[in-house]
Each structure stands twice: as C-alpha cells, then as structure tokens.
Length: 152
Image 1 (spheres, rainbow, N blue to C red):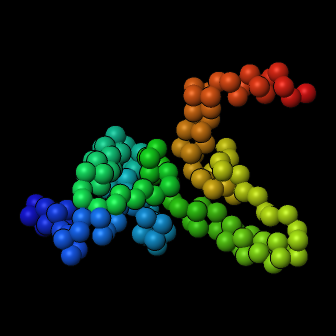
Image 2 (cartoon, rainbow, N blue to C red):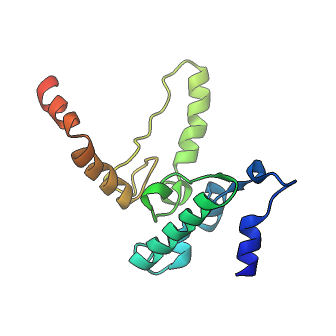
Image 3 (cartoon, helix red, strand yellow):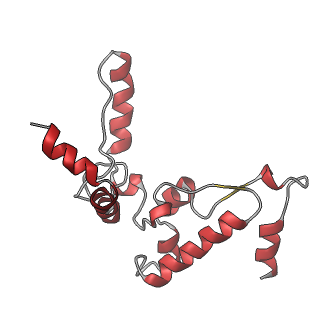
C-alpha cells in the first residue's frame, strides 16, 4: 500500500498538474492486447469483479492529483481488444487513404460501430454495438421519430 500511496501522491517539481494520470492507454492496450478488465481477469473480462475493479481504478485516477486521461471506450467499460488486433486491415486502409486524399479523392470512411465485431469500425467490440444501440433507443428517441417522419 505504501508504494501505491507514493505513486498517487508524487508530484513533479511540487506541481500536481505536471503529470497525466491514467489506468489505460492506447500504447499499453495496443501493445499488450487487453484493456484493464482483461488484465484483471483474462478469462472473464466482462465479469462483475473485473468491471468493478476497473471502475475503482478510474475512481482513483479521477481523485489523484494530476490530469486524468481516459482511453476511448473506458467510460463505458469496453473490454475488447484495441483496433489493431480486431481490425488489422484498418492501418493499411488509412495508409492508402493519405495519397488518395492528396489526389483530391474523398476521404475513406469507417463506421464508429458495427453489429459484426470483425467488421472494420472505430469501436469494434460487441459491447460497443450494444451500448450504442441501447443508448440510441433510450437517450435519443427523437432520432427514431425523425427517421420515421422526415426520411422517405
């Protein structure tokens, strides 16, 4: 516990905002292939135990002196691997897009989520699709009304 307390209270040049505090990052998750819930329980990253411990890590992160940084999807407790593992063709697609844009072509588009977790998307996990779909129904019901009445 002393090591954790020391890490949480350490200041650089006595300036608490001189450091970024995080529990997940694209570098760590991309290189190791797993998010914090996966690191906590590799066999059951969607378990109550893994998600609650991940939430505890976020609570500590937000209450520790420093600038908190959340990794995309961490706020909704995504547990899947990061993009390079789930959609390995995306980096090549982005590399091909750069010269195409210089030639004046339209930029390539990638959907944010997809029902198929193996399809290219920015958040390529089943829980991303589930959360986005449910959020659309519960928090943005007007979107459905506009879709039914204004598109034909």
